[in-house]
Length: 413
Image 1: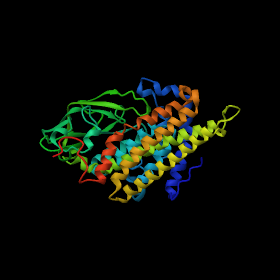
Image 2: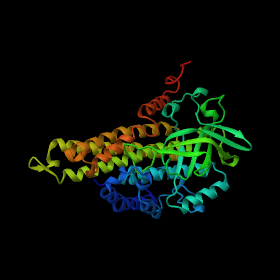
Image 3: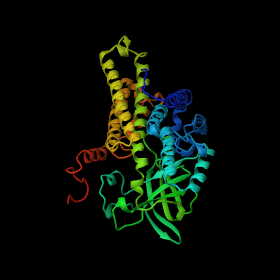
């Protein structure tokens, strides 16, 4: 299927073509040839260094980093749409690789808006210099994840990770889990409760934490079902001392992080879409070459109907994703609800596309060395990333009916 994406700028067209060539020439051949590698229980050995180096060469590893530091600064008027386009293309090769890269993009946008100048100079320079350097955003905790975003803005819903001011700096204790790039990032943005007397939105602060900070322990790599080339991790903070200038935002960090959260939903939908596109491409090739019942599969009506259904779902998700991305770039008032719609819709529709792909491949679909079951596993992950589907729906309803929707957590009073 030829994908025609309209109204792309020259910059977007060139970047899309570079990403597609990189995926077709480097990423997909690696995934197909070394399919066992994702199952390595040594996380450092999963993704070859050459993959990130290749991403660096085509200029997609440091998107969002200001030009003055050697990064690739995008047109601000269409930045989120460009992020969406590129993350979809990379996820068509591998969703874990896409997630590995987009954490750098999203955190870079956060840092260029919130970090003091001297820290931007230090960390953007290091990020640009080292093709293996990764960033991570540390929000989720063992005792609170999607449910915190309903919202239920009271002290008892606050972060369990605590930061206390001491000797001109901050001492942080707590734990984070399910952190994208958490296992191998070199720099973390960590959220902690700094005022236990107020709600989460008024008492949460964010800090910039280098990996080598004493008191920071990378506890483990979470062995996930899919997206395994992004090493998800758990972090422990034990009397970790952070200097005062590494405080990004005091008490109002969650409100200021809107520049991260909305693009994050768009990128999440885009990565998910890339998985669906790859599942469709592989299935379309298979049903036009594999013979069953005396004819190639596509000539069977049941197969043709499913293939048409897959293509339709992909285009519907892309249309909603593009509309939501445009809303974020434009600063539209409906951007938040559209972002949640795009995220939850993509997660469920692409899961159906992956299921069709699995079933249309018959017995080959569940063979580890055939590659289709990997796409099915990768698609399944998105139902739980960046908020569960149900929590996303709650947020959609609260955006549409703010005065009558339920709180969905805590007392109704």
